Length: 96
Image (cartoon, rainbow, N blue to C red):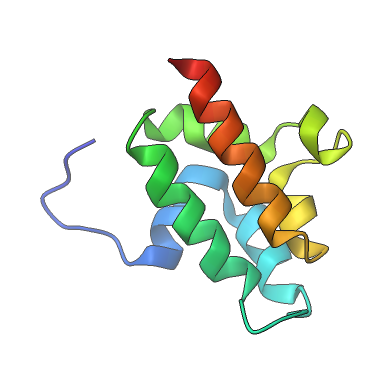
């Protein structure tokens, strides 16, 4: 979706996935050198290359079989960063 005034990254994730999702990521303890919020933003950029913001938001907040029926937000908050990245790639591949 084209915007005349681009949102900052966190605000854009809030727009797509919701305030509760971002707050959950901000409250998560980083388990590695990678921050769950930054990984979520990276995943969002990948998703935006293939689906619209509404579909990306649904993906972030829907239970995923590849993530043991948890949402990507829950998995990211639990420190399962690579698992979420893998699930996003698999979901994108299934869209085509």
